[in-house]
Image (cartoon, rainbow, N blue to C red; front, side):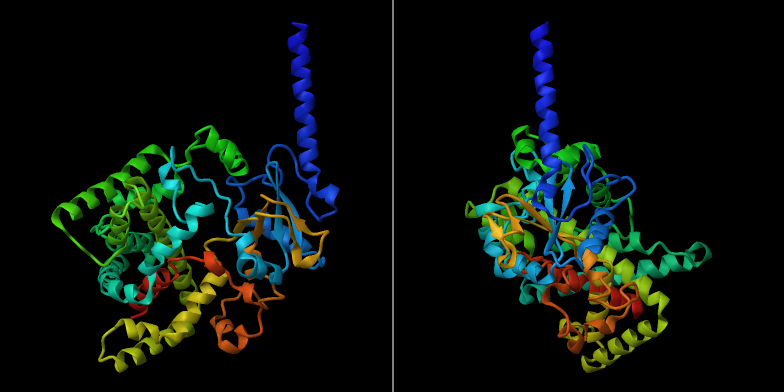
Length: 458
């Protein structure tokens, strides 16, 4: 009995020493930080009363004028560097990308196959997969998909009109409608399916899409453990995505592949590229499902949110809406009254509206990278990043920094005119990331957003 008590006391002492040492990491190094607490570190309120940006942005604002290239934060017991210097952010994303190629996000292809996608995976698997998938999102492929997106956009215009006519007190829930639009677009262009989410909000594809974002498999404490200790979580075979959601998407991909292979169906879409990779032995069915899932998840929520915010801002400033409408009418006149891919490319003010929306409301409020080797920030050996350490670039904080964007809470599309762009650092606008690991679906996202805005302001 005494041996058991002694062992317990020793274990508690070691645990106390480990926690105390861990939470003193930034203090020992003389790096600016906010005092953490056990067990959440600086993550108190995360996913209950605070979004991640509500934790990181105040830290950025507190230390951005200190002259230090980064400050420290604790994600539970994990010390993470928050980048304060935009030139350093540029180095991490572009110049020194070879050292910061990995995102450090949890993925477990064996037990949680939908996490094994391009956005999460790291190391030697990421680069060849990215190179093979990039052709799917070329300008030529976007032009090919343009009519399919327009067809869904026309359905959106009809449904929007019907809902507006029947709206109570003139109130229309636009975010949900835009989410159903993007669901139908991606279902058609990625999975080759007619999802019918615009007409039927309870269509299975739309429901599963919402659940993929809202239903968490674990509590915030368990999720925090998985993200803080991904290698240990993989060893313990932990999963983040609900099994029925995994079964749904894997099942759709299996059925689509079987049908296309048996009937020799060839289409110039994303699924066809995945099938070709499978036939060459480069992807398994579950790996295909993971890639299809992330392009659904990334395109569904990001574009829907951007559309909702853009329409909100345009509704508040009718003069901007009218300016956009006049630009659209002028482009249509040059293209015989038809909204073509080329006409869309000429909508410069549309681009400014989308850019300012993504500046004010970045869907991904931060970027994360893992340092592979010891890294002295801009040659300063005091401010070094250790091998395996995570760095966070606070996109939301940068986008709302008055030193970068005067009056940051105002919606001013003209900020992105060429003369103003030239006055800002390269890393001042990061809704799609930057460098070799930027968002592969950027063209597709902009296209489906532009089409919906065109039809909404027509």
